[in-house]
Structures are given as structure tokens and as C-alpha cells.
Image 1: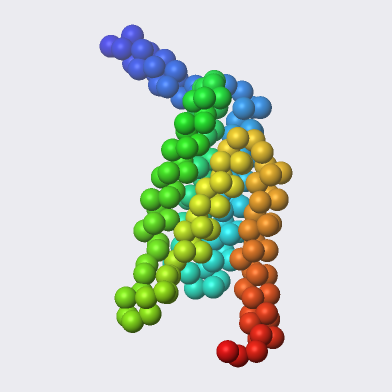
Image 2 (image 1 turned 120 degrees about the vertical axis):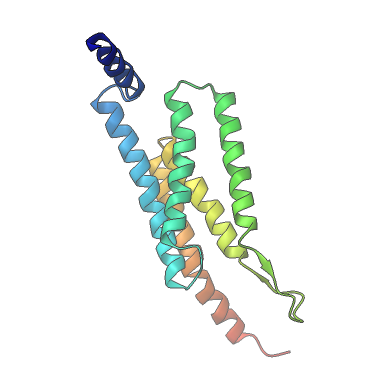
Length: 167
């Protein structure tokens, strides 16, 4: 019976041996935390504006996207395989985003709601992919640009509409 437990223990060690050393553990931790943090920043901005997809949703999207690219990359996948993984993430987020878009049927046929939320989730996934692939600086820059678009552009548009004479 002692040999059986030893075999179980050795098997468990092998199953949890995907992180080989401190360097790899640090790399994985930084990438996943970076993705979650940056997703959380965008989610916080959306939550402050009363949008349904807030901090947790954006953090999970970014973290999931990072994990989807990080695992195959760690497993030694080639560029063509990584390309398919990224394509799958993009398509999957498209379905998630589609669920946030609603068309108003209460007389105003031209009003669509949730499009910015869908685009924000798509952007959050792209940021997660960047962080997961080790492009942290690109992920941070992209997050800052997204914050400018989400925060500053509505002010600019309001100002331009205020200055425009009524029809």
C-alpha cells in the first residue's frame, strides 16, 4: 500500500510541474496580474458610468484572454498555432460582446445600446492578449488610450455639439 501512495504522490507532483522555476512563476504571475489589473482599470471606468459590464467582467475577460495565449506559448506552440488561438479569442469575445448590444424597439429605430460596452470588452480582451504574450508596455499604452477614448471623447463630442447651431 505504501508503494501505491508513493505512486500517487509522484503523479500529483508531475501534474503540478508545469511551472518549472522561479523565473517562469514570476513571468506568469506578472502577465496574469497585469492583464487583470488593466482590465480592472477599464472596468472601473465603465462601472463609474453605470454600465453593466464593470470591474469583474473586464478583469475576467482580460485575465481569460491572457491565459488563453499564455498556456500555448509556455507549451512551445508555433506562430501558426498562436495565430489560431488569438483568432479564437477574438471570435469568442465577439459573441460575448454581441450579448451586450440591444436595439431599441420603442419607436426610435436608430438607437442601439451597448455598442461601446461591446467594443470595450473587445479592447479589454486585446489588452489581455498583449499582457499574456509578454507585451506589457503595449498593454499599458493601449489601456491609457482606451481610457482617453472612453473618458475624454464624450466631453469633446458634447462640446462640439453645444457649439453647433440647431437645425
